[in-house]
Amino acid sequence: MRVTVIGGGISGLVTAHRLAPYHEVTVLEAADRLGGCLRATTVDGAFPEGLDIGAEASLHRRSETRELAAELGLDAVFPSPAHSSQVFARGRLHPIPKRTVMGVPADPADVAELLGAEAAERVAAEVLSPPVTGDVSLGDFLSERLGAELVDTLVDPLLGGVYAGRCRNLSLAATVPALLPAARSGTSVLELVRELIAARESAAATPAPVFMSLVGGINRLVPALAERIRARGATLRLGTAVDALAASADGWTVSAAGAEIATDAVVVATPADVARQLLAEAAPAAASLLSGIPYASTALVLALVEVGESPLAGSGFLVPPTEDTFIKAATHVSNKWPWVRERLPAGTAVVRMSIGRFGDEPRTWQDLPETELARRAFADWQRITGRSDRLVAAEVRHWDEALPQYLPGHAKTVTAIDAALARVPGLELAGSAYHGVGIPACIERADVVATRLLTENGQNHVSVDTDGTPLRTDTDENTKKEHE
Image 1 (tube, rainbow, N blue to C red):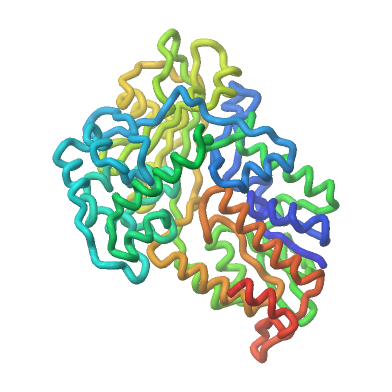
Image 2: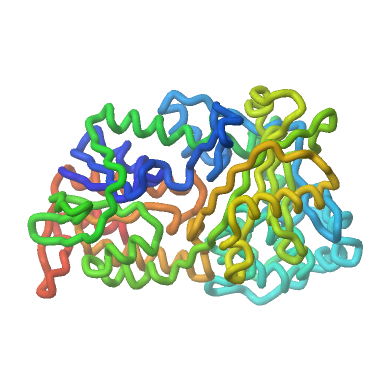
């Protein structure tokens, strides 16, 4: 079977990697590079080994990335346990409490230093609310239960570090499903968190690392996947934007770069808006649903800093949106990752600063020249940390419309999208817009998509409705059930 994968980010590459041993696979990528939001930089040659200027880590507690890395012969590296993160609140930096589930503490006393005594007492005096039947805003639910101060000061920046969004806009079910049982039953969130943390702590005598990366950055997954895909006979085409998809009784036609590619199946592994445009005629119901998934834009400043004899403290910090700052977070990369520290000249450090959240007013940071963006970000970092270090080199990367926002009802939307696709043979969707924005979730979705195509055993059963819409036949009922 011929399979065309549209999009060469981690989702498209993993899909191609799984399918290439069994089918004739072609990956089409519009950009001149693979990897999507996994990208490396040398910071103008200052760090030849390369550093991440996109996603910079993957969850190690989930198995998908660590298993893929092992499969590709890549050795995982882990953050230094000697450094921890902070949050900037009420004009100074505070340690982030460790025993929480996305900021909700097992013991309200653990957040007293950060929030103040009155706000900690409000957390302890949890107000139970009626059982939730559908999906709700995570921030609104927790604010009603535990108070606005906890939500705005701790939950929001923690969740914002993942989604670049605001927790009052984001779905409880899609972002922190571990807390959903308390919402569904109307029982205590604090008691649930205590149970979850107790289970986590008893699971192993020595806690496993939360995050992982690779020497050279988590972006090293990309060339390793590309090499493996090519070795299995698949084709990777860069600079090849897809203009249209069309289906017929013979399969699919992909229009790209002035040519038409005949294929039996298509995997669209692009952001939701690109997928929406491509599916407008081939799968209009799914396309309509995709239009309801908004995206956030962000920017990153990666800086080489001269610190002299005064090393940086901690692995970085988060900033709540209630604080009047330019940056929303900073990572002290060379403290967090020992492999970076080992390769730096003495007296220097690498700092990564993040700008932008979903809902930002236009023309606040988006149109600034890169030099001004870097200058303002570094000045803000200096003000927050109280340091006066010299900026040696910096690189700025804009990530426009890069992070999907999981609004309340997101899971229901994705279920409806998959149900709509179940009626369209040989068409699948992969990417961060569906079941998680992190690398493990993207790998999991790609694995599911590849499995569904492999289940067809190389056959592409197609019939066409009266309006030209392709329909899955009864002979493909097992695959249809997987979609539903």
